Amino acid sequence: MGLRQMKAERTRRQIADVAVTAFIEQGYDETTMEQIAESAEIGTSTLYRYFPSKELLILEPFSEVLDYGRFLRDRPADEPVDVALTSALLDLADEFSDDSRRIPEIRRIIDASAVPRARLWDIYLSSRADFEVALAERMGKEPTDHSVQVTVGIALDLFYRVDEQWKGDHRTDYRTLFRQALTSLREATIILPALPADVRTP
Image (cartoon, rainbow, N blue to C red; front, side, top):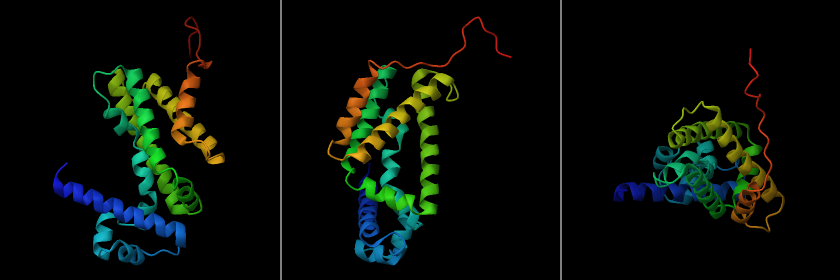
């Protein structure tokens, strides 16, 4: 990453941090783009260059932790698929944990606002599709292959279940809960619905 790109990324993170703080303290609807620019000590035109709309600011904390495909692609190319997938999920859980103090508050704001809530769903669907592409590349299959999509579905459902557990009790660190969930899969009985080989489908 070049110096200019590093500076731009640093500015982007600073703006997002200032904005999220304002949303939590003042409320999403009550916070204006002008107030965010002033607090971040930048011009309004600069703010809009980085974030063309306010909903993109509230969604920024989720843009990286939902980038499942990136975490998988960052793993060494020669890693076995199961090792790469597990390591990628652990890396993702670690990054989520770094922002975990604010995530519940941000999520409450998003859930109460129609436009950001819809955009978050779009981000999730796009991220899931990219995750399928990244895993398919590792498995040597097409993204539409059932084995790829079911594997992705299980991985994402695991995050959902850990998230629900963590939201109910913040006393346990998120990464700890996620590792416990992964460990439990070793002895889990997972039944996949499948027709016997000698049964013909219409």
